[in-house]
Image (cartoon, rainbow, N blue to C red; front, top):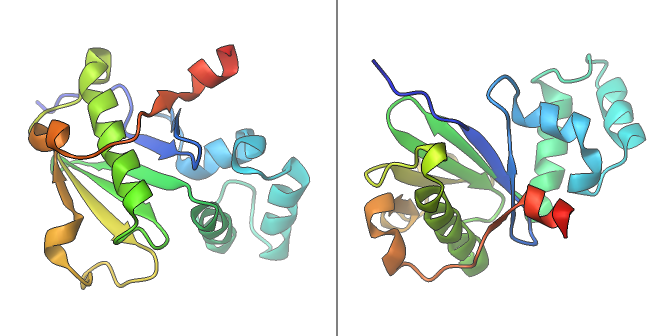
Amino acid sequence: MTKRLKYEAFFISPDNFLIPVPLCLNHIDVICDHPELFGFTKEHVTETFKKYNEPLRSEKRARNALMRTAYKKGFIRLRYRRDHYWIAESENIFGNTKMREQIAGWIKLMLEKKEWNGDEHMEVIELDTAFDETNPPDKESFHYFFSKAFEYPSIEIKCQEEKNDA
């Protein structure tokens, strides 16, 4: 039986905060519910869906447009895959030192949060929206293993709730 994680998706904000995506939701749901976290307004999100003639929260062109804008602002999308690895996705993530350090910081946070079931043997794979995911420019540069997380230079990542409490 596969162990269910407390969270299977997150965003890392450009200012180093982790935004969890609840299990019953998708990344686009969090953008629709909390557009201010991404520098959007509710009107902008609604108008984007109207522009593409799609229902709010659909996983089509409007979602792609909003995600692309979030990536351009520096957000990183994290998603767990059943094959025991995570995907980190953003624009221009390959070779981006800050994003690599944010991912390493997120890995460390996951290992500290035992209730999140971070697994020291899990792997994180980077996807750059500017490249074809099946042919990244440097296959060696985009794998992180949780077991080696403390070897990586990192930026401290805090939970969004901590930002809201401050």
